[in-house]
Structures are given as C-alpha cells and as structure tokens.
Image 1 (cartoon, one colour):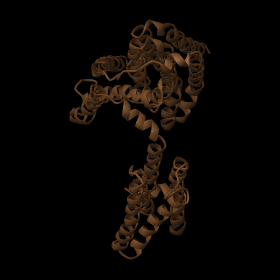
Image 2: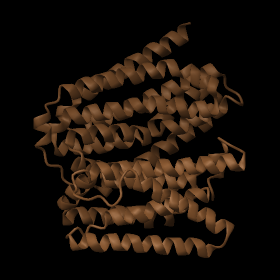
Image 3: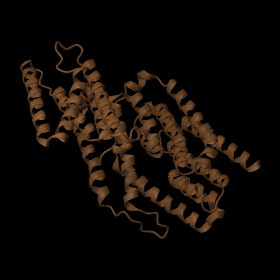
Image 4: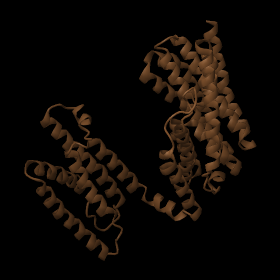
Length: 428
C-alpha cells in the first residue's frame, strides 16, 4: 500500500506533492551520504559521499518519473546503466583489495529508495533508510558482536525462532473458558515477548556493554513490557550477583516508564480520564526514575564491565510465567464477572496482578457505560499499584538477595505514594 496519506497530510496539490517527495528523496540521500562520508573520511578515494548519494537518490526519483511518462523500459535502461557503473566501481575497489561490497549495495539501495519515494512509498523508504544508517553506523559493533557468537548462541537463536515463527502462528486464536480470556495464542505471545526481552538484552550486552545495555533495555523494555524486564533481570541477577544494583535500577526504571505509557493509552480513548490519572502517575514516574538514576550513579563501572554475560535465553522460565499469567488472568476475570460494578476495586487488584493494560482498557471502556471517571481513575491507580507490587515481590524474593534492599526501597516508595493518593481521594 502506498504512503500517499503520509505526503498528502502536507499537500493536496499534485505539483506541490511531487516537489515534497523530491525534497524527501534528497534528505534520504543526504542522511546516508553524511554517514558514508564520515565513515570513509580517512580513505584515499571516496566513490560516493555527501554530494553523490543525494544525486543518486534523485536519479532514482527521476527514473521513476521518466518511466511513468514514457514506459517501464526507460527505468530498466537507466538502472542497467547505473548498475554497470556500480559494478565498475566494485571491480576497481576489489583490485585494491577492498572487497567488502557494503558501499556498492548502499549505492543500489539509495537509487531504489529514490524510485520508491516517487512511487509514493515515502514512509517505507524512510524506514529502510533509517535501518541502512543503523547498519552502516554500527559497523564495528556488529563485527565485534559476530566475533563473539558461540555455538550456544546459535542454538539459542534457533530455539527463539522456533517458538516465534513456528509455534506462535500454529496455536489457536480463540478462547476456551467461560470468561473468554484464556487464548493460547495471546498467552504464548507473552511468552515470546518475555523471551525476546531476554534475547535482546543479551545482544545489547555484547554490542553496547553491560551497564549501558541494562539502561537501554530498561527503557525500551518498559515501553513494551515492564513485567518481562522484571522477570528477565530477576533471573539474571541470580547468575550475576555483581550486577544486582544495576538490575534493580533497571527493573525500577522499566516499572516507572509503565506510568506515562498507560497515560498515553488512556488518552487515546478518553482524554478526560487520562488527565485525572496523569498527576499521580507522573509523580510515580518521576520518583522511580530519580531513585533508579541514583542507583546507577552509585554503581561501580569497572566492576560491571568485567562481568561476562552468558546467553540468558531460558524457554522454561518464560513458559512457567505464561502458565502463571493464564491462571491469574482467569481469576481476575472471574472476580470481575461475579462482583460486577461493586467489585471494581477488587477486580482492579486482580487485574493489576495479571496485566495492567487489560484492566486499564476495561475500566476506560466502562466509563462510557456505568462507572464514573473518579471510580475508574482510582481503579486504574489500584491496578497499577497491584502490578508494581507483583514486580516488587518477584524482584525482591525470587532474585538475588543482594538486589532485595534496592527493589524493596524503590517499590516501597511507589506503594507509599499510591496509598497517600488513594487516602486523599477517599477522604476528600
């Protein structure tokens, strides 16, 4: 599907739209050209840099325009001539023992991206260009990572691919319980998510370094699933006790990022309700971020960097949590069904134990039917608090003992702030 909506947000005039796409083509060429110029600035000769890449992108763009006005043969002819030029460049580069091929592939891709932008695949072209820049920029880090891959790592990768690409699609996408919540495919999706967090964390550890890897994964994992981050870091803390403080900080950061993410989810459905929960949630968020930052500043960098991380992929750990999730989800759904409106707060507790997003969406939807915004707001705060308590319990009592005092303090602060908010709301 073409990205016409992407461009027509800015212009509905065909001529203006054409020039806008040409500008985007130039920017894509500049983005990649700057990276290649920077990367090859010490080379004796540069076939293409900051000036050549934009022109190549324009060539691809114009070849699309010409073929549209004449025939497809025009594009094929231009591409063949351009391809011969690239092949010639590769030939002389190979004679100088420069046989990597990365520059030549990027030259062809930029030409194609210019052509795709003309066809109005603007968003797709921008994403591909961004991916190219990432691969080109992190060349040394990726080579360093490849050098460290062991046979165990390959086995782990195959197992992860197995549960993601084969098992997940084969599971039935329907429910098998009276409360319509036990869906094998959705539950296994969570299993895959937990496995992915651990696996991505391992890659980050190898590419970026232990301490930075934990920080980055905590941030990204908090957006995706703070529970998955908690489970992964809790498991790892038992194997690498030297990193207990960093893992605790990571768990608290991921758990804190959950709050603005929930606000955003609610805002899409009910802006007024989002405003009601934004004040307590932003307080929770800031307190967690501040405490996790303090923990990281007190972590000794040298001790962290000396630790060698083994592949953390453990499918049984993820499967056990998937079963636990299904059980808690069933119990929370049953409580909500039997208690009805009178059991909103009780349901919020059970719902928060299983999955905060599910109960948040449920309460937000109920505000359009039979509960007030205030009741929904308190219920959401209770659910988020219950979810934080689960993560606090997991990290404090199932992980390394060395991590316990940090997680108990961090989650204790969140619990205290939540109790204060609920007390003030109920009183006034």
